[in-house]
Structures are given as structure tokens and as C-alpha cells.
Figure (cartoon, rainbow, N blue to C red):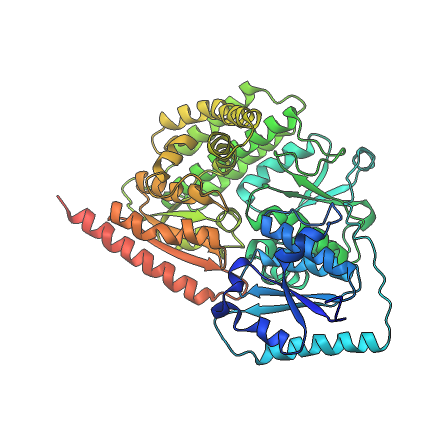
Length: 570
């Protein structure tokens, strides 16, 4: 290229894009314009990415892609076209980051979406437009301004905390977060839980998030941006907090999505706090201390007890509204406990016992029999009513009893994965021991509530994470750890064992990991558990609510028929 003063295009795609049947001859299309074509892995070793970058670098391909983009940024004779498969949610992360790298060098970023349609008309237009723009730049002798990427994050400092910065948190599971928030506030944080988790939040999310990203990311970012744009919060005295798992799911990059949205809105001075247990992005002003950790576990367990007891008793209550009334009364007592200066184990035990016993004594129609339906799926869609179109309310209104697996089990799943990595994937022994300690601590704190649940009339105790893993192991390998991974499969088996063999598997449209371990295992589960009646429902901003409702009602009709046949048997 240098010898012939030629121009080149780095055609950056995933490894499978090298297949002519997939790339539809785009490399030949580019070379027909007398432009050389290079792959991203042929130049990635020549580029050095300025770190830290905005996103969490989750995959080796992503690392090569960013390095190739950095190399192109430094060269006048190279440009980059990124091939992106339609619906590839992971590339919602990479396309934005590559764009930012190239933009910092005044380069033109071009992305071509590739799917099964082989009509190259649009691709030809995009390629010709790029080459025409480059020729104009050459004719005008445009001088590029190559700038450092400089994506340093804004840190939440101790001074910000002492100054009373408002920390806003997006809603995810109202029945749990309503319990947990007072626990965090009691540690001196001015925390506000957002309650704007409706369709308006999704519409705002669509404006600020790459639309190939998953539905939960639109919901989360939409809540945050809707609140900040409302004018209710001072951008110079506000911070945002968001959980971060550190795994292979796009959820690991929700913090990066939020930062990009803040920059687009001109609010990049707002610090984003990552709440995690894997050491990502420490913030001096917010620390996950043992005291806070204990309160969070207490809160999550008490939320699980509320969910278990409320969903079990509410469909059968003799006096309509009595279960919700009891929940609110006990919730006030829980708030007072978690907000108190000294949170004792004895006080926690008394509350666990009181919640179970008072719900257990609630007058219900004992002779009434209803179909039992479990809900599993992606964590946000599973627990947030606004994200699943108020699925629990719908099922109960249609005459079903609902069970949703414990919220705290998801965190046990994350800890259990680190133990597996220590055994088989080279994770450090120290990390393995630490995560074993986390699981053991949670098991100890859940031992008493499980004992109380076991001695009750209407409730069943918690299931240990090792037991859930054993249920999943015959169907999927425990190495399936992206998204909900093996845990989703294990939860379905757990529900079947608990008598909830009618299951709604909720997932964001395009969440590939959960399609594999959710929808992908339904046939196998049915073969091993013939009574299983499972329906997979996709949720997305453009999903048809009528279609969702029809499929859920079809599942329920099968559940009612099966219940009638069981009742007729001697």
C-alpha cells in the first residue's frame, strides 16, 4: 500500500464473517473500487489501545477490534468498516466503542449490518459514500486532529458523599428494593429509588442506547435518563448507582451504556457507581463494607420471604386485599429494623419468624385449588413488573398461584460460578475460597428462615445453590455461565420439583445465552418431566402484548385442563 500510495479498508467482522456465504462478497465489492482489504486481526497487533476505555473489555475479539481501530486511527491511508450481524447484541457494545476510537482521530466510521438477505444495494451505497467522502477529504487536504481517547471515569469521592450528593438507583425488583433501600440509606448515603419504570422510560432508553442492546439495558438507562432530564435532580450534585456482575453478559456493560447516555445528554460530570463484588471500578465515596453487606443480605432475604409468602397466600385470601395489607404492615417494621443504628441477628430472626407466622395464619380458602405457575428468566424481566407487563398480576387475575424463585439465589449463582472457575478454568484459589465464604455466609443467614418455613403449614424452605446446580447438571454443563446460564435451567427443575410444572420463561428478545439455557432446554426438560408445561415469552419494546397474552393464556388453558384431570383421578 505504501509503495503504491494506495488506500486500504480494514474490514472488521467477527470470525465467521470471513465466510463468503455470510459476508455476501463485500470484500470483493470493496476491492472492485481499487481499495485494499485487510482483516482486523491482521493489524490488531500493530495498534495500542489507550486505556481505560469506556466499556468493559469482555472478549478477545473485542480487544483485537479496539486495537485495530486504534491502528487505523493513526494512519491516513487506512479506514475501517465494521460488519455487524443483525441482532448481535454484543456488538451494541463494540460498535459504539469503535466509533468513539475512530471519532477521536476524525475518522469516518461505517457499520454494515449483515443478515441472510444478500441484496447488496444498500451496502454498495454505503461503501461508495465512504470512498467519495474520503476523496473529498483528500482533495481538500483536510488535516485530521488526532486526540487522546481520554475516557477517564468520574469517581464518586468521599467529599461527594459528605456533601450529600443524591444517588439515584433504577428500579429492578420492587418487592426487594423497597426493603433494601432503607438499609443503604442507614449507612449515610442519600439514595433515591426511581419509580419511573414504565413505557416512557423505555422510549427514553431508545434515544440514548444503541437499539441493538437488550431490553433490560433500555429500561435501566431509560429510567436514569428520564429522571435526570426531568429537572428534579441537580446534575452537579447527583450520582448514579448500578450493579455490575463482571461476567460475559451485556449487563456487565450497563455502566458503560449509562456513561455514554450521560455524555450524549451533556451530563458527563455525573459519577456512575458500580455496585459489585469482583473489584470493578472502586469508588472512595461508596464502599461495600461488611456492615453494609450484612444489611443487604438481611434485606434481600426478608424480600424473598415477602415474595414467597405473599405470592403463596394472596390468590387464596378470604378477605380481598388482606395479604397486601399484611405485607405493608410488616414492611414498615422491616424498614424500622434495617434503618436502625444496630441491626442485630436476633432482631433479624424475630422478623423472619413474624413474617412467616403472620402470613401462615392469614385466613385463606383452604379448599380452593388453582393451577400453579412458576416464572423464570432474565433477572430484570423476571422481577420487574413493568418489564414483564405485570405478569404476576396477570396470572393471578387469570386464576393462578404464582411462584418466583428467590432473588438471593442469583447472587449465590454468581459466587458458585467463581468456585467452578477455580476448579476448572484457572481462577485463583484465593477467589475460590472467598466465594465459598460468601455462599457459606448466606447459607448461615438463611438457615433460620428456612427452619421457620419448614415448620409452617403453607410454605417450603429455600433450596441451596448446590442443589440447584445438581438439578441443572444432567441437562446443561455448569460451565454455561453467561447471562443466567445453568441457573435458569436449574430454576425450572426446582419449580417442577416444588409442584409448579407450569412455567413462563421470560427473556429479552435477542438474549442469546438465555435462549440457549431457557428456550433451548425446554424439549429436554419435557422429555424428563412429561408434566412440564413451559412457554417462553420474549419481551422487547416492539413485542406484541397481544401475542404475549395469547401464548400465556394458552399455557394456562393447558394447566387448567391438567388440573381437572388430576382432580378426577381417584
